[in-house]
Image (cartoon, rainbow, N blue to C red; front, side):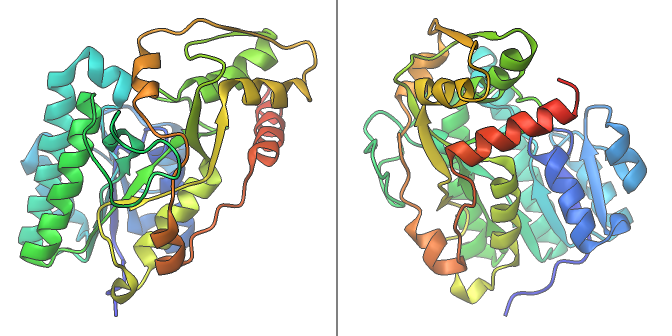
Length: 319
């Protein structure tokens, strides 16, 4: 049986996923039992609903201070430099993604924490990886610093599980689409930006080709999958820091066509930039059979449902 999570720290809580994961965890475990942390100034919803601490994950002593002060037993380590930003500053990506993860794992090991969540990404895959139905176990030879850090992170997480008995879990996230937060420098950012531009200006210039297909996931499914994995009984897990995760796959052109069903006059141009090369190195569809069999994963949103919900939520916000 897995031990229960009671006192949670979320690093990178102001990021795209962290900013929605934190409120979901607070709703489930209690506001005071979930400490949000980041190097960025938090929005009021994070600061006012529960504890917030400024934490730079490259500073191990600061992580130790917060873990000790709040008697943390679980860390959701969401702080990271993403793919496109990582290519502009690969040294920073290594310091944050690897140095920060190592600090978290060491603090967790030394203090005997119950569990650590370390997200991975489809960026672990590379040009030699099968593009269709990418299997759980396959070639991991990424061409970006972000992907390299994520492969290293998976290996580290699995090492800490097998060597030290630290319960480290992780998901290979696809591109995440959110109605609440803007993306943070990833190659799949177009799939969020396009909604804002469609509503505000009726036009968008897309930085990948029209026929570019990538694995994606709507944020509500992402949050649900993350909590499901972390609450799953350890005895059921056949993998630990590296579960494949699938939501939906579509081309940039298919997304445009679906948006045009709601905004008929929307116009999209396609002008690929440096991110196209990154996208071309990633899979088109993902086989997540182990996640479905081990802990019951199944996405709820398809393309049509996601587009309808995204547009409705953004309109409610006055976009």
